[in-house]
Length: 180
Image 1 (tube, helix red, strand yellow):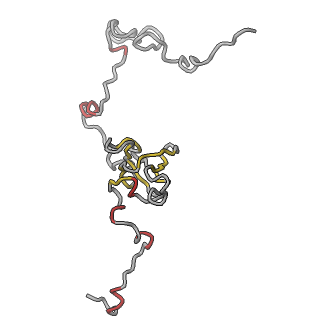
Image 2: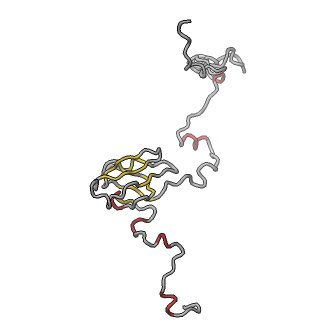
Image 3: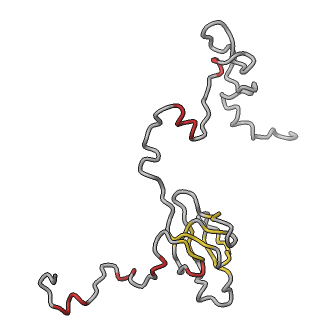
């Protein structure tokens, strides 16, 4: 189907984004390649530190690293590539180490928006239940015990008796003046 154009017009290739025409087939997002085969300035994640060791760098949500030295052009250091990590630090990595092209997804659409349906779902995430000190026995917490509901009978403390309120932690790091 020609859609009204001449025979010569449909043979010419038109790309709305010509800057992506020159990319290799291997350099598409999600491909895992050795650093030697990845182009300069490409954003990568899940980078190995040593060949075959498994991904160690730039794995968290929203992180990525950038290839800083094109290994194929720089023949003097053909064994190493330079990668700028999310912290801003530049690290020299073996060119045989693999990395995945692209940036790690920040969040799944339902990652934080969904409510937990039951207490067990919170436990699946590794969260332990929080129990008030006044609901415990005196052997378990300084606020515990008493007949019926009580206020605790002393200022707020941790289960080990350390004060928890009134700026207790804020002043702990300050030193007293020495001398006069």
